[in-house]
Structures are given as C-alpha cells and as structure tokens.
Length: 287
Image (cartoon, rainbow, N blue to C red; front, side):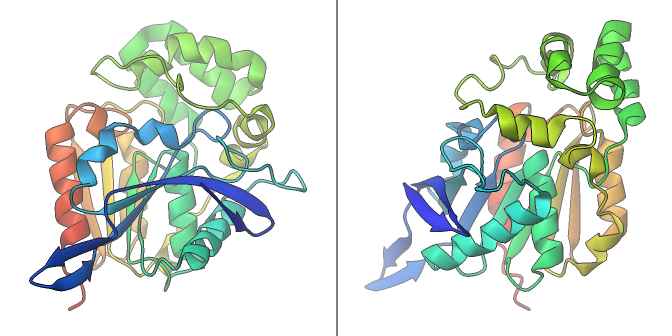
C-alpha cells in the first residue's frame, strides 16, 4: 500500500489487528511503526518475518522511508534525518495514527530520535535500537578489529572515514557485515530494493550519516524511551547507546544491554528481545 506524504508516496504494510473485540467492546491496539536502517540498501523487509511475533499483540506498521524500498524518491533528491522524521508525522496524520510507538533500528533509530526531538508531543513512545546520535569511526574500528582483525578494521575505516564511497562497500560487505551479529545471519539486504541515490546520499563521506550529531538535542525528547544495544555490535557500538542514554532525561529512559548480541539484538536473543518489546509497548505510562 502507498500513501501520499509531503509530496511523495510512501509504501507500507500492516500486520496485526487494529481492534480487539472483548465483552462486546472494541479496544484499539497500540500501533508500532518500525523504521529500517541502511537507507538505499535496506527497507521494511528487514523486519520480516521476525516482527510477526508482535502482531498477536499490536498493530505493526512496516514503512519504507522516502527514497527507500518501494517508496517514491524525493522530488528534489534531498534526504535528511529531519525530512524522514517529518515524513513520519505526515504519515501518521494521513492514516490517523495517534501517539504511535516508533521503533527505529540503526539508521531508523537516528530518524526516530530526530522525530522525538522535532516533534516531542507526537510519539507515544520511542524504541532506539542499535543506533547512535553521532558517528565515531574510530570507535567502530576498535570493535571490528576485535571481532575480525586488521582486514575488518581497515575495510571499516575505508568506508567510514577514509574513502567513503560506493567503491568501498563491497569490501565492507565481505569483511565487516558478517561480524554484525554473533549468531550467523543470512545474506544482508537480500529482500531489499537497492536504491543507489539514497545509499550515496546517506553513506558517503559528507553525507547524512557522517554529518549527523544530535546528542545535545536529545534533551528535547519527552516520551518514554527504550534504548537497546548489543555488547558485540561493531557498527553502532554499545558506547553509542550509552551516550544516548546519558543525554536523555533519566526519568523517561530505560536502557537494556544485551551481553551476547550484536546489531539488532532480536537477531541474537529473540526471546528476551521480543518479551522486552511487548512489555515496554504494553506498559501504562500515563501516570
């Protein structure tokens, strides 16, 4: 399905029921919107089929961000965390979604955080998964070296600090991406639609990812926020999540560290991860 948002059609799918019917009453379920990472390389299919485990409890909306997957390009070829965050507001308005729970993984978490910063009264809750507010290539290099040795460290630095264009991504994919999780994963992005222009805009030196720094602005987030991170994540090291937690209001934040997980903790510890998500989303935080 597609919906017009801020001059572009955004593709989305929905899993789970909108309403529960009990004792002759219809009760609206919480709506969880999931935001994928790796713009241009990934799309909403990164959450499928794993997040179907939540569809028995919540309405789950799988969204392709502007320029990604099956969504339209930006008419002006301009991509930013701010633009994607504003699209999220327009998307919810178009579908009459009130107070969504927004989970962003990796780059999706960057968008979710900026959404919470720019529109603090809009989200019901945020879940910032395996993400960061500022890229530190040297921090990444340390973890890649620990997990994969010199060849992984050098491939990471070529992509994240030294060269940073599409020519480096093949080596990064070969030597770095298999290190993202302790649990072996299938080939990355195999179900995604590749979108070169967005991949370049986000990943290359001087692009969206490298220019990002919203740590100080996290003080503007006001809704309950869950931060999850894996101790073995090389691309968004756990110290990045610790930085995020340190800049959020301590009264709203819950931090969960997964000792035996990497990037996207549900890949390595699905039982704990999905139980945690169900508990956080369902919790009554109105008082």
